[in-house]
Amino acid sequence: MTIQWFPGHMAKARREVTEKLKLVDIIFELVDARIPSSSRNPMIDEIIQHKPRLVLLNKADMADKEVTKEWIRYFEDKGISALAINSQAGVGMKEIVSASKAILKEKFDRMKAKGVKPRAIRAMIVGIPNAGKSTLINRLAKKNIAKTGNTPGVTKAQQWIKVGKELELLDTPGILWPKFEDQEVGLKLALTGAIKDTILNLQDISIYGLHFLEQEYPDRLKERYGIERIPEEIVELFNEIGKRRGALMSGGEVDYDKVAELVIRDIRTEQLGPLSFEKPELTI
Picture 1 (tube, one colour):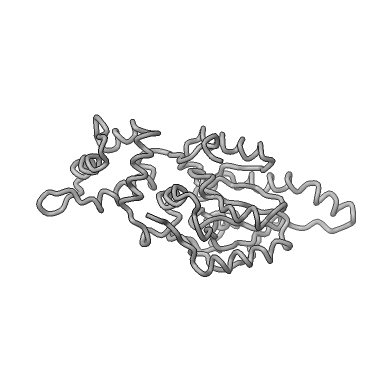
Picture 2: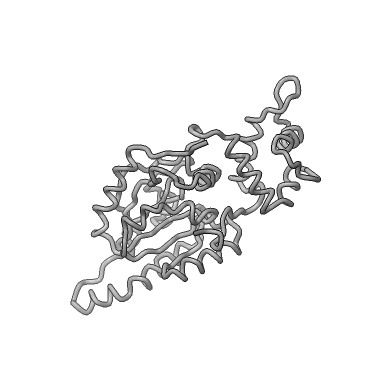
């Protein structure tokens, strides 16, 4: 299965991000803490170039804490500041402003020395669909300004949002890249909800998720579905899960589509605990 998703508004968003760069002091790059590499758009590096950046590992509550710490060290080793946040619960919001001030201290000190009147930090938020940008904006602004939704691609236009006196945000639509060179990136994005389910083969996505769990979190897989031994054949595993969870068709046969939906939902709703689908040392 080849996964691609690049709606027309995303191509427009890329052009707009490039045009608005000169208006901002810093880029907030929002990534999914469960897949910090796969949820980073490689085009962003080309677009923002040397603009100061703060990487925000969102949904950190859904990721393995120890692995997230490794990712923060990974980014810092590359000279990029990074924070673990949970925009849904509002965790890490104060640290975003303080980290931004630290990153931009030299620039604002130079402005002050030239007699420029102090002003709010201007930041642009960029990230792939469903990374949680709108939720983050609403948390920072402490009111519902940006549209939110579980469906990727809700934000389709840019808007400026004031956050107190210290920060002004420029929201941008989520941008995926036109072609995934590595199809595993597409699978990870699909499994974590960054790509619309309606264009996916959910059985393929769930098979990828089950193989991952078997390799990295086998005990959680067995505990969740009441399985003593994980079968070697994926069809047998589907059958086991289907029978134990009642995903059956009339006649008692296992409904593989229902099993696929069930597994994906369990992964996305943390029924198997916090999961990290990639580690820094395994990422190029």
